[in-house]
Image (tube, rainbow, N blue to C red; front, side):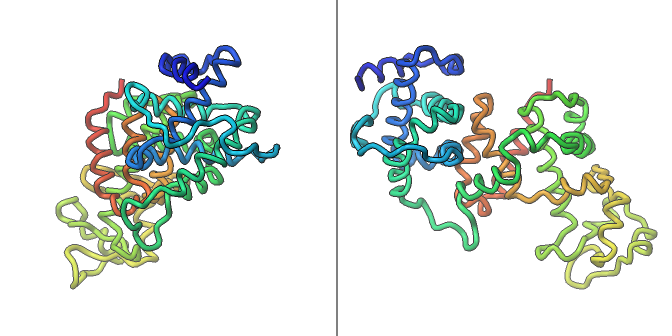
Length: 331
């Protein structure tokens, strides 16, 4: 039975995965996916941690409705080796996508495999490096994400998609030229989110000091800030840094009326201030969600390399996103 399932899995077509076929084929594909995930080497489990976490949380959302059978009933020993074409990046992604897209009924039928085999496998996974103090692991990010955003849909159900286009368009003319309708795909909107996050972070880095208390004029002469800005917003010379420090009470007023920075003019409306306040953790959550889109494997890989210590790699991450955006065609 195992060899028959493996043979069918090796011919598994990722493009046609939504058309599962017969019940027997479905059983074989699901079985093979669990078999593969349980036998992945540690380095591959770490590499695909974000995608695996998505699958784990997908299963956790469905209540356990039946008695778990004894171990060894269906899944082979996890000590069996996986070799040849069976272990490929496309194969791993296909498994994650198939398991993530199972119906609640199918999830309920296979929960015992997740609990009996994959959970223990992940719990034994050694840490690659100690996480930074106060940081959260990838599965905790994803857990919060599901509570806050209900996966993908509600994240863009309100006017946030328009705010993304508004802010991204001011920072990146390539994005502004796209101007998709409200029916834009989630993939397009994630591209906007990435672009907005990159520019918003540049904006915040130039005006916020490390403790977030003050808004700086990062070189008023270079950015064309005149003396009236200094007088109007209560700017005063700062002895400990270049430029001027803006008092907290004046900061929001300056942001609302618009401050020119490195060629970007971001006029922040009350609604778009939500985007201005995006944190690195929030954008990392959104990028983890790209794991469910086959078209963006490179983004998924990036998010997996960042977890579970995303904070430590924020600068590297933003640099990678900037390079990726620069190479992406918006047509």
